[in-house]
Length: 91
Image (cartoon, rainbow, N blue to C red; front, top):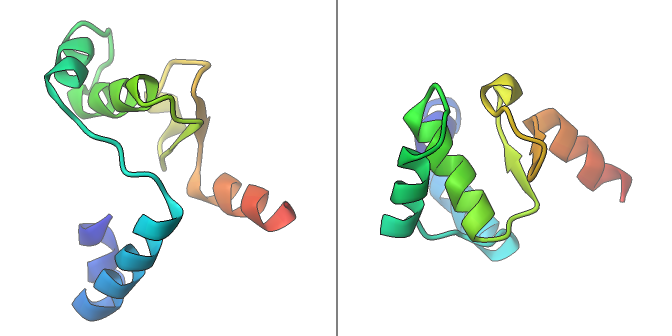
């Protein structure tokens, strides 16, 4: 996130935003259990497998991604950033 946002908004704005986001979202840990699970999944992209494993092992509600087709799973929910914003705005 830092890399993408920093390119659009600059370093200071990005750091301020991420500090606020950390208070709103739970940050999940990636450890050897996560990596081992990812290694045994049939995902085309290993980084996506790590994200999925992290979500499952931390009982997360959703994975937010610009490429939902990269996640061939039903749970957790796979959402685009736009879908997340729409859902948060409607509640």
